[in-house]
Image (cartoon, rainbow over all chains, first blue to last red; front, side):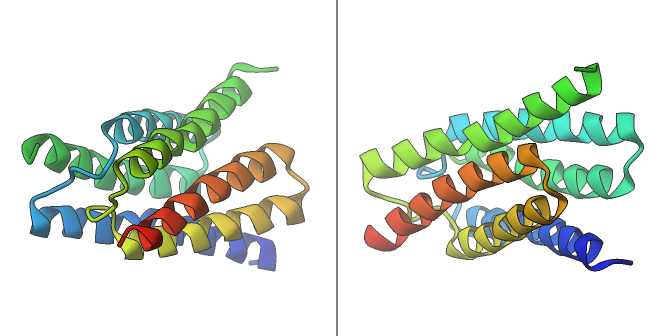
Length: 84
Length: 84
């Protein structure tokens, strides 16, 4: 694997894993007042389009990272709606 | 431009523009208590790596969307630190 691919994988891992602490924070504090609803809706639709893009290109790294990012952000959106 | 490229551009536009409402919400409410600090740090580092990845590949769409996403999220991080 070349260095650029490793860089891309590291980038994808971080931008996906980043939403885990947000998910746990919202779950624990039962509050997402400061998290923008418009941001969550727009981001979830965008990530869903990235997932379709990965499926069309049959690009496994794009599919995997965006499937996980979508899952985490759907949960954050659910918690936001539940606690507001 | 083929349909898959248009899909990718739409996805990138949404996942970048998503952070504008979060930025304005935090700026207006002067509160980011519910926004995870770990999420912002991890996400900013990840987006910085995506930017480097785009620069190495000389891929303008990756460079442009990630430069803007990084700018918006650095501002959100700055506001988070400022108002906490």
